Amino acid sequence: MTHARVTPQEAWQALAEGNERFMSGSLLHPQQNAARRHAITGSQTPNAAFLGCSDSRVAAEILFDCGLGDLFVVRNIGQIANANTTATMEYAVAVLGVAVIVVLAHGSCGAVAAAIDQTSASPTKLSPAIEAELEHIQPAVQQEWLSEHKETPYVDASLIDADAVGRRHLDETIHALMRSSRIISDAVADGSLSIVGCQYQLADGKVAPIASVGRLEI
Image (tube, rainbow, N blue to C red):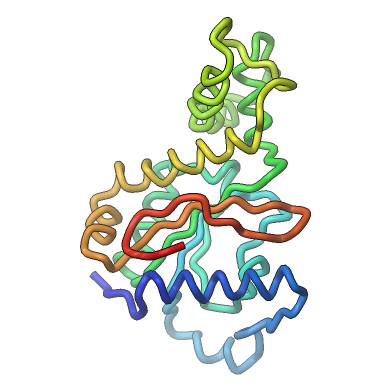
């Protein structure tokens, strides 16, 4: 197993500083030239991995002002920790030696909106594949709905806070990664890895840390 080259705190701090540059418009665009391209031809040594939503407005390298070889990225609808994404994060930890995994939810998420719709009394008909993926988000929908509404299990989209659903799902994604992967949970336990759950707001560009697991301060 490859050991992390930096501490989780150092890895997270570099990402946080990159997001500050993105918000202020003072981007450095590091590691994006021909020299960097040639330097990493034979291997990659990212310090951070990223599990995010496939939404076209949520591109990790841009949000954190990173360059080639800096982030190991997997994206799907609703940043779901399924078998494929968990295996990808395991590879990032065990083989590439990343020190932090960032799980990123975001506002105005279409997957969350679709999961809310699927939990309503008259859900929209979707393909079986999409419905199967949205099932990972629906528990968060139910938890948020039933925290305020006990009268019916069927969700009214106009009465539920979609961003709050996103935060609940974010927390569950972190737990799912640790629950389903001994590699990840062992690395968190020995202090070489931390997981940070964040929520990104499209309007202001801020990646706000919501929850973390491991030895770092957010």
